[in-house]
Length: 265
Image 1 (cartoon, rainbow, N blue to C red):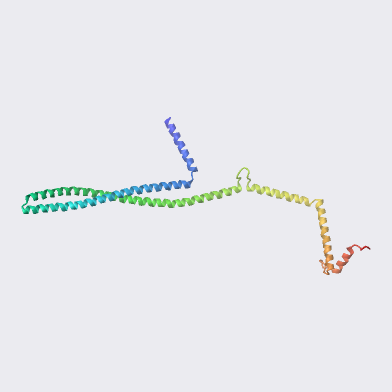
Image 2: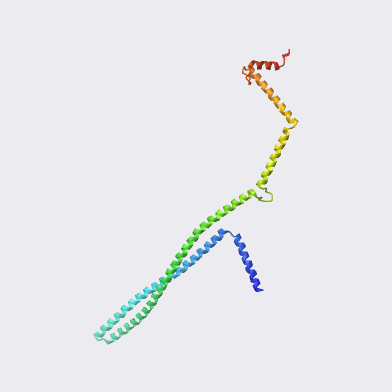
């Protein structure tokens, strides 16, 4: 039973992670990854700084030990020399005191020499560790810089992908129905063409009726009367007729067409 529950839990966890990755914004995930890389570099830098600080402290201790070693060596030599001088003077008490002081300085010198050897070994190890820490920081810094450069490239590709998705969506909307109440471009074109063809059909039928012919005859008659009146005006002005006939013919024609005058006129 426990194994089944564990398998179900792993399945649900994997499913939730998959859905989260599908819906997550790649730009935010990229920023999170870079922030984590920067935090790791910061922690590595702090650790390297501690290693280098340890190496510096060991170096300071070694320098102090070397100074103490030199001082103890000089003191021991001076005590031996003073003991020898006291012996030559026959002052055995002073000679014994200087000899004990020289022995004390010699013991101290031996202890400092041992400490110096230990500090030298420790300093060598800490120097090697500091060099490794510096190399690790430099290598990680180069990797982080590469990630920052890759970040710009990925952001540019993400913007291009979003733009292409918008273009694809816009192109698809021209040939596919966007919603239930929005027709496609092809449907609208077919509707307009059907309406236009129907209008042409009605116009063609209207041109074949008797009323249309009557209107055409009346229009022709009106045009003829207008042309006759223009010819009269041309004759009155002494201008040639539009068809090249003499002006007198047009005057006679207009006089023949004009009504006879009455007595009252």
